[in-house]
Length: 369
Image (cartoon, rainbow, N blue to C red; front, side, top):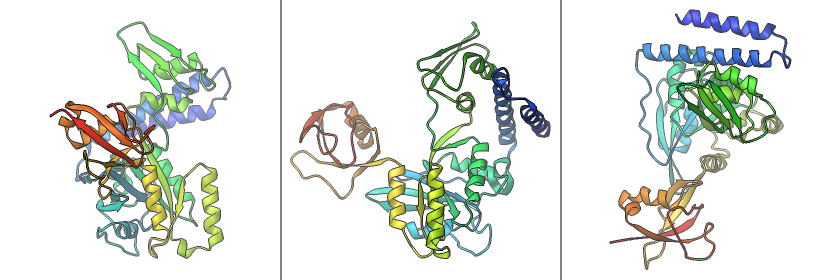
């Protein structure tokens, strides 16, 4: 059955290739792309329901979880061992890591769980080389490190392709669109912003592959692919940082050239030598920033702040989140809070639950007794 779905996808791809792209055909091409996305989703569900064997079950712990992905023997295990107290087997041959190996990296008071995932290979999105299990694990992390070599930048294209085919969207936000399904009335399209990539006909053509009756409101200027993504149910949006490893084996000008090429493509890059422990502090800082972690120092009434063990939250979180982090009773019995630091208008500002905290704020929470 899966083979027939693959054949259908191939036939549609051939039709797209043969169709001349112009204003008159753009809605037809959009619908064909949506049909492919729907077929791939169906195929994925069938494979998942029929999948047998052991997956990678690693319990998420700490303040955030980061997955390390890349081709076999790229240095993932070496990096994990250097950044954490884990003992991941290291070898000079492919497929050394056959299971997911966790380790804990401590940085700026945060505990960040790192996962050394088995090497991705071309075809991983279709299940080759335990690819399906690797990608399943990837969907559950907070961030990815994409490891490549400076001599092999094409590795990044392969990794990104495999992850994209599996429904992962790197360094992208979820499209700002509201899809309200209803029982009748057809498809009604609204937009709160001017649209440059889409028109009502294209939107309805794509939408009709997924819904029969719905009110659709676009709240940002989306592309065709973003619109299709908003209807598909298997999309995961995740932060990613490119790590160029083995800089000890490449001349400095080659490394610099590789970094520049990737930055032109809007990638955040950190070049390291895991083996020689070069630039690992910079990598830790980049991971911390990409995870958007912030440190909050708690100050009990009448005492000094505790700077040794900060509460770790993420950017945009509020005093209410801090209360829930401590204990749900703090949120339930909350009276007010006092804040010192970057988010405070003045020292010891009195604030409510909705106050947004910033990195290195000092916080006192007052509750009813």
